[in-house]
Image 1: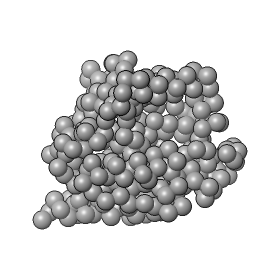
Image 2: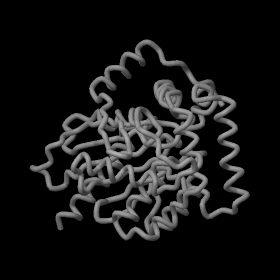
Image 3: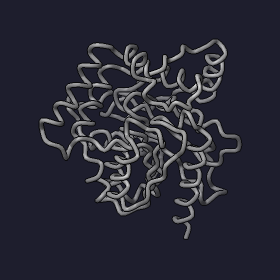
Image 4: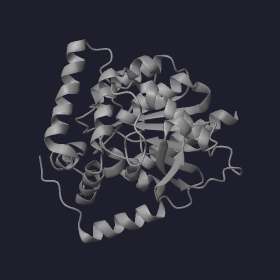
Length: 300
């Protein structure tokens, strides 16, 4: 594995400028605590029937800030929101020590309620796909389209031994390395050999800011979840995409998720697991096309 570069002064300045344009916000969700998020695009969609709000859910080693390249599109005509999942950023963790997807989906509902979003296009990356799938299954009327990027399927359908082994291995790695060590040792696995140094530094930056307790809860979620089962209960519009060079949720695994959802898998050339970071133009185009199609379906 190639070394993961540090953030250069120029990269840091570019990053800080982008983050300043889409600052972290917080909303109080009553008994669920605080939810932190970032927002981009336009909140005024009255002139465009296709401009449903776009909601973006990050993976286990990331956060809301990872989506700022998708926010940073000139003339964006839809409202775009990315959360820090419970236990990430300033977001309050879920209560359960070993949570299930519905625990996170309940917080997602509370957040959307607080922001007045009754219907949206929902995008989940990796572990975020598990939460997105659970929410769509529970609240199908609120999801105009479900787009899963390099989805993690979860180990809920596996044997207890497999679930415990996968969970305990990841928890042991977290305890040994901590978030900063994970970023040093593991962030390079998120990208393909084609990723540039800026993308590698950006993935590392996001992973280094993970909070240990939230990551541990998310590890339990991954062990408990069964995305395919939730997708089987959702009859709405679903697309699945994966990077051709994704070694974490490889195309063969994502093909099984696509089959469970009754859709075709879209494979993105020259992209790894965090494809939306290393190939932002390609993934932004995928997201935009899916949003437009979901909005057009609503208007028909």
